[in-house]
Length: 376
Ligand SMILES: Cc1cc2nc3c(=O)[nH]c(=O)nc-3n(C[C@H](O)[C@H](O)[C@H](O)COP(=O)(O)O)c2cc1C
Image (cartoon, rainbow, N blue to C red; front, side, top):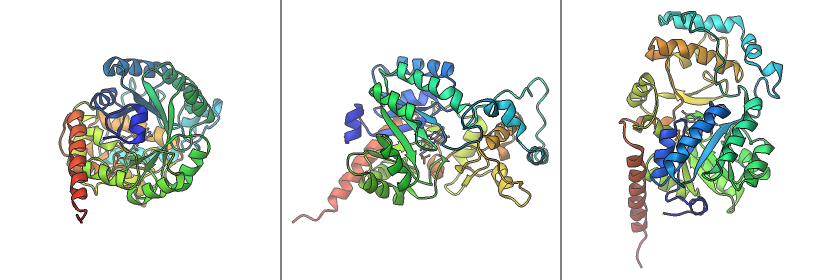
């Protein structure tokens, strides 16, 4: 099974697996796919540890690293305004009260003083300007294995593209619309991940089925497009390739594999969820992201909501509340970014089995479709 992007990267199957968990990245890479480490929350020192670990576990196989460096967020440009203390102080009292009342309703206690240290959190859009260049440097130091750097929430900053290209790496960009894809190709992005609204995490409004061929046609035959959003089976992979994609970019399906480090409440909620149980909401980060529907997302959409805050302020609020809800095991409030494909994620299985099952089903599907051709 080969496509130009798979050949270029030297991988067996064009199955790209986004995960924050290094064990999943290594497992998919070793199964013949291309694991991509979501590094948003890893400062440079931690990233170095994660990449060393992956290098040790994948031999000479290639893998990728993904960042989410947003184009717009409060504190852009760095400096004092971007410090955690300054951002934290921008959160209105009304919003803090709303969260306290919501958590009280679910009998979630406050954190004990020794845990309530307001430690800086790893929310999307927090510390991007300070951390970004050093994070990228860590990837460059691992260029023997790291063959692609990908960015979400807008085009990657120019230094990312320049430095990655100089090190011989591909640069990928997540896009939810044709216009964004064209813009990214215009500034030097090599691989477009066309991500539909079904996807877990930050997403646009257009479905994968509509978006992928639009993007493929817009960027032309020389730019590889990976289809993302709602893909977890061989039939869906066959459909993505039929739409013109050169591979599939998957995320949600790796949250319930045996190697994943997903917490027990979130895991239980995902295994039980149907494809109707997600919502695209700003309640987690301040930008629209698909996630499990919970009492938290409902409350922010409800009549008493003060309205969500911009990134990263909403993320700070959400993470502070998250520390309380996790500690109290308040299942109704514990969500997770996940896509509509969650309805199929009903069992915990090893990553390798999922990769091989996808490939087998892709072959069966392709043969079935070939069989539809009338013989003359
Ligand atoms: C838990 C989770 C976190 C995500 N975080 C990021 C991220 O930090 N950066 C990014 O580029 N994409 C992120 N995504 C989106 C994935 O890269 C991918 O595009 C998406 O999961 C594909 O759709 P699917 O969830 O239907 O497989 C995330 C997805 C999930 C499920």
